[in-house]
Image (tube, rainbow, N blue to C red):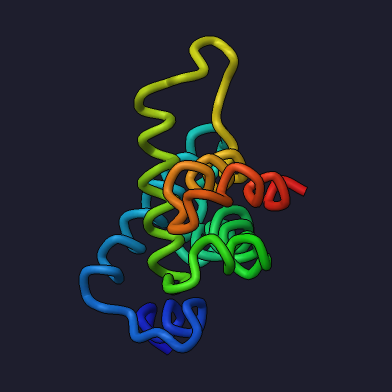
Length: 133
């Protein structure tokens, strides 16, 4: 099974484009880099893919399937949601709104993204609260 097939299984009912495949490869490569920073051995590519899925993608997908998210973003696929949340997360980290308070967690990026970019502007401040629970 190729990596592209694996990603298509992750993003069910969605054909992964070459551009998305390249982005995913970059995300996993970055994840692998951060995994290898603090350990005395080299994480393999397969281990990095599993870790990315378990520690990053699974959390985003769980928020994507939440009823509040589906209501706030009715016309978005899981891959689109994932890539947009990742861009927002990197934006938050790059601009360091927290200062000395530490890292942003992926969950915070998902909730902040929903609050700021939902298509249901009149309800997003109310519904995003449900996403946090």
